[in-house]
Amino acid sequence: MRRLPPLNSLRAFEAAARLETFSRAASELCVTHGAVSKQIQLLEGWLEVRLFQRSTIGVTLTRAGERYFREIEAALNRITSATASLTQRSQPAHLNITAPPTFAAKWLMPRLSRFSVACPTVEIRVNTKRDSVATCLRSSDIVIRRGPDRWKALESRLFLQESITPVCQTGLLRSKGAKRLSELSQHAWLHTDARSNDWKTWLKAAGIPGMQPPRSLYFDHSSLTIEAAIDGMGIGMAPISMVRQELQTGLLMTPFPGLVTPTPGYYAIYSRKRQADQGIIEFCSWLEREGMATRRKSVAAATLRRR
Image (cartoon, rainbow, N blue to C red):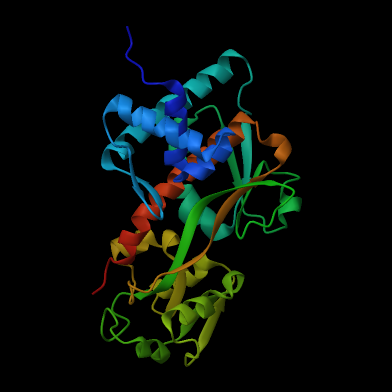
């Protein structure tokens, strides 16, 4: 006889762990915050293992909780796929995804093979149109855009929090790990047209809102700004999640790893008429899992190559 924990508790645990909050889990499951909390307590009592660390600012998974979450999530995904296949409410043959160019190249594509392994029956087609969300949804199933959440007539799911910090070629700054913010004013600044407020936002958070560079260079996409920084053309402002590989390999460094500024994150947006679409549900859930992993790794990446 199988020894299974309460299945409702497993659903509550998976949602809370994936969304990193009991409140959002309650909203997804259409129950109250207290109901989710009670189910989690029931599961922890049944397992005799603490799954979440609770504090005044929220909850985080314990190490045991993280291990259990990976297994439970995979099992629930298999159950979902098997059920859809059996009842012939199968996933669509393909999903059309529209995403910003740099996000698609630097974040989505390096991870997309993992979705193909998890959901092999769904064919993903990615394009980088820069039209409005409404226009893109005429030919796409999901549109990915940075927030804030302003798509009131559509369904939107935040899946990736984002932070920015200056990056540059390793060794560009004399101190090689810049101890003085004043060094910024000695080098060209690299700007991205689509993210025109990033430098202003970071400078204000760093306490130097009036600082100006000797010259500035402007690029259409963040990917071009990142390449310019790698080539030593100046100091660029970059989303940490988009340059993690460059930081790990030493192509770039963060001169001020302690000065990281949060900016609006990325949302998956789709029609409310499609919110029960199995393919969309699975892709958005996968985005949330990858976003959670990225947040954990990006903080560590920001401290790399401080030479």
